[in-house]
Image 1 (cartoon, rainbow, N blue to C red):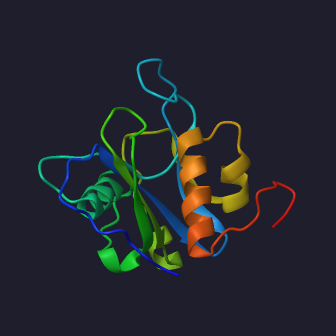
Image 2 (cartoon, rainbow, N blue to C red):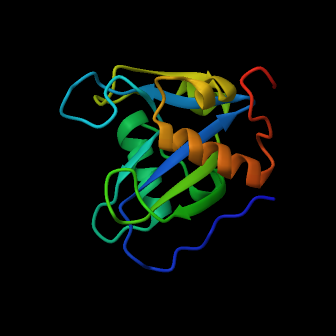
Length: 156
């Protein structure tokens, strides 16, 4: 079932977005700098909240800044609030969404990160250089929405 948990207007730290086409996920390799969390790890679009934006606005703005894609909320299929963000005490949001081949072709990668790629979902879930909290959130939300049921890297 596709469900996006409604935002109650409470403060939150940021939002991440897992955009999926088929069995692949839009990812990027973070910069390899010691002054950032998870240097040289595979990450997903998203980041910190700006102003009074909603969780979906935050995720979609970050997607535009990082990948040059302007998508609407109609691409989102599931989302939920997590009680703690990856970088601080405020809650954060995590969304699942769809991306089309045409949108993939239109990506213009920004200046954050080393490179991007469409990575197989299972590879991301078990990659030793992926952001661990995002692996957990992707698995939890994917299973809840019926997308990914395997918990073993050898199953598909």
